[in-house]
Image (cartoon, rainbow, N blue to C red; front, top):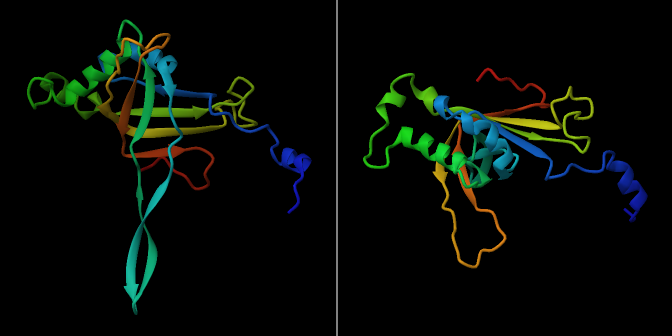
Amino acid sequence: MAFNAAEFRSKMRYGGARPNLYEVTLSFPSDLGEASEIFTFMCRSASLPGMMIGTAPTSYFGRTIKFAGDRQFEDWNVQVYNDEDFKVRNAFEAWQNRMSLLDHNTKAVENMCSPGPEAYYVDVTIKQLGKDGGLCGHGNGGDGLKTYTLKNAWPNQIGPIELAWDANDQIETFSVNFTYDYFITDKIEGLSDSI
């Protein structure tokens, strides 16, 4: 195939999706909810989750035949800005503390047994936005270009904040790693949220 810039441009009808146009939303559990709106602004970077199906290899006459295995969902990570009120960082730490207290290896009983596991499972939504301000989505009903929702997510790792005397003109960031049961996404034929 010969190089043809005009043909390439014609195939990129909308000018390409941009990695800096996105929105991540989550509702922190119950009384930590004040950090939910702030988190959307403090979420410095994220990713659209990948997909993976495991392989079930089987031997047959000395040959390995590979069958489709089970769907696997890898952990998901974000980078978060830290403001001087530590509101988002404190909310993540309190969230984890409900699952395992810092000073001994038990749950925060008052939060875990009542109302129950919903005290720490939440849904996280990652939305790819368009260059039109994000919400048109080229005929997708104002829901952005593509949306992923991580179901029953919780932070299994809160990263350190690096400090240094020569770290001038920077804003602190930290990572948060989430584990989740599965995700749903729009615009895939036959997809159901009935799992």
